[in-house]
Amino acid sequence: MIKKITGVLAGGMILFYGCYNDKEEILYGASTCDGVNASFVADVNPIIQSSCAKPDCHAAGSTNGPGALTSYTQIKNAATQIKSAVVSRFMPEDGSLTQSQIKSISCWVDSGAPNN
Image (cartoon, rainbow, N blue to C red; front, side, top):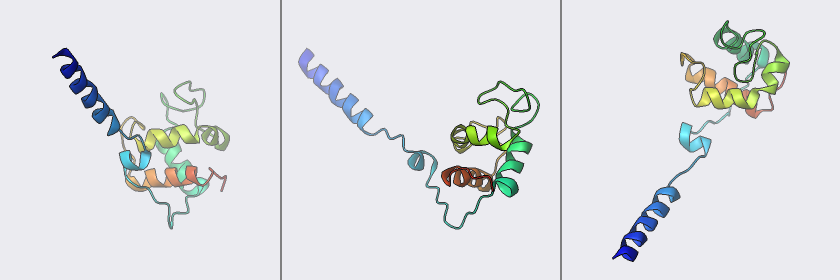
């Protein structure tokens, strides 16, 4: 009887873990960048400055998360972290970004985070 219960539990665990998927596209929806020309200067930086580089968040001197996000270099160095945080809606804390803003940041990062 114990072997039977153990077998059922083991089978259930394999089934449960076999269904888990951590691909970003599946978790957060497919994000295609077709037709999106996200520019750092025109699109990404204004979003970061108005939503992230605020006092008590990521302003100059911040030690929160990746630190300050006030210059291109700081933002580029944290690009992958920024994308992950906004796509998952973990950041900004007030969750105020639109899907279009999230897509701009995501596509900019996916294109190599150029200084354009």
